[in-house]
Image 1 (cartoon, rainbow, N blue to C red):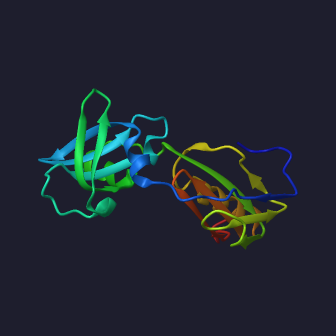
Image 2 (tube, helix red, strand yellow):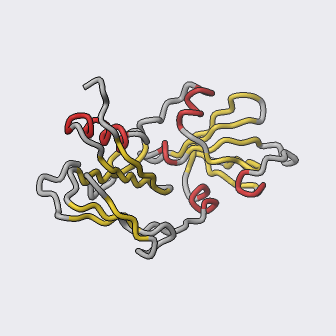
Length: 185
């Protein structure tokens, strides 16, 4: 959501480490067996693209996702699926393997501006990032593609004809960078 009255400065929230196993096992999933014993799963949440996993149900499988642990996924239709060493995966990988498209079902929020500073002592595991006079600020998460914030920063940098810094937060972490104006504009 575009905020009409932009604040003079915005500081990202401090992110904290989560238990990935807990996050994976508290939802219900749709499971797609795309070859014998191999599954792609996506959650039943509105932001199901944030919760995509891939793995094998053979108990002696040697995969080392989640440290080789066996995770139990609750299924939407009832029952459960146990996967040995599954991996958290991307919606794009699932789309390529199965044809099931949840690439536009991720929650992100973006801050974009001419400059930002990183404070590694700002709290959380990775510190905080502060933008002075941001040109774009989303206080709430928006459903869309993972690349949405970077693509928006690229478009704004091109429209303004100057580089812009961006910060994008997701349910699983964050990423940031510099968007450069396109020469095609």
